[in-house]
Amino acid sequence: MACRPVVSSALKCHVLRLKPGDALKASLRRVISDLKLRAAFVVSCVGSVQSVTLRYASDMDGNSRTETRKERMEILSLTGTLSGNDRGHLHASLGDVNGHVIGGHVIEMEIYTTAEVVIGELTDANFERVGDSETGCDELVVSVRKT
Image (cartoon, rainbow, N blue to C red):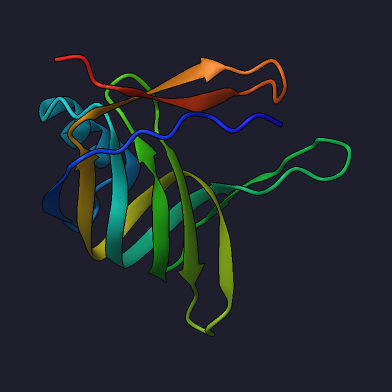
């Protein structure tokens, strides 16, 4: 397997707070679009949700399952990449009222009390998603930003 080229870049951070009822992924996509960010990623996120839709990892037969849970949960971790020309690729770990943890690919999350999010932007890079014949998915391609 060939390693993809590495792109080094300066970093700029953007901080935002989402409020009760906000859709996290849609809100992040709107911020990315409004700020015209081309290579963004989640640095940090703390807060809580009242509803989450996750897609879980595929089983050995390639089948994946999506689940929506309407309950209050703490955001333990949120990570992923975002750019102006795609839906973003986010994964989350969430803790329920009993301390049990679930995690998966974020379809959407509705904020309960708050979400304090730090978005990093690689100012010298560009993210895009391109179809990959090996995985059958649109995968991240990182390139040097042309000014």
